[in-house]
Image (cartoon, rainbow, N blue to C red; front, side, top):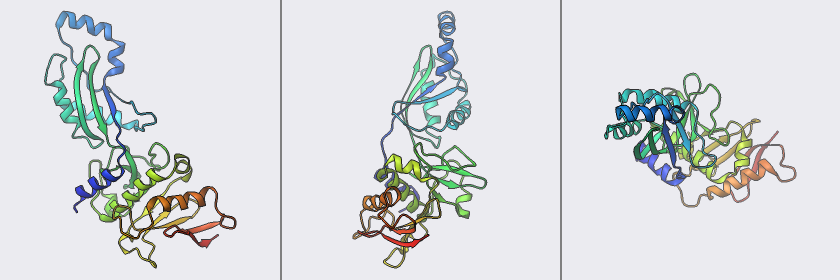
Length: 289
C-alpha cells in the first residue's frame, strides 16, 4: 500500500464529511455594493479582487485556521485578472483552489453579482501535527501537510492536535507534502481514532499529546506497540494501530474508554498512575508515581 492509498484508507475510516462555503471578497464587495452596481450599469462588468478572501462554514463548531484566508488569497493572485462577465473566471479560480493543500475539492463555483465569486468547497480538516524545523505544521485526515505553521502546539478545534511525527524525516516535510512513512500513517490512524472515540470534554483537557507508532508493527503481549504520551509524564500503551485492524485486538473504542475512565474517574488507588496498559479487557497500571 503506497502513501496515497494509506491516506485514502485512513480518510475513509475516519472522515467526518464537512462542507464549507468559501466566499471570495465578500466583505469588501458587500460594503461597496452600491458603487459596483453603478459601475456595472455603466460598464457592464467589474474586476473581482482576489486578494480578499473569507472562509466561512455552515457547520457549527467547524475549525478553520485564520492563516488559511491569507494563504488562499496569496495563491489566487496567481490566477490573474478575473472579470464578472467572464464565463470562465469561476472555473479558473476553482482549478487553482483545487491545487491548494487545504482544499479537498471544489463542488461548485459561480459569479454572484455584485458581490464577487462564491464557491462551495470541501476542506481538509486538521487532525494531527508534525514537528517542523522550528515549530509545528498541521496534518489532514488523509496525511497531507497543511498551512498554519505555529511555534506552539496546534489546535484541532477542540484540543491539541496530537503530534505524530518529530523525527528527521518529518522535519523535512513542507506544506503540500504527504506523509510517506508507515509509522507516521499508523500514528495518524491513532489520532483519528482519538477524535472518534474520546469526548470533546476529555480531548480538550488532555493538553499536548504525542503518539509514538514506531513500534506499532512489533506489538505483541510483551511489546507495547503504539505508545501515547500525555502530560504530567503519563503514558498509555495502545497496542496495534487502528489502521491495520488485526483480529483479536481489543476494539479501539474500548481502549479509549479505559483511558478516559483513568483520566476522569480513576478507580480507587489508581489515581497516581504513570504508565497505563489499555490493551486488555482489564487495564493495568504498570507504573505509579
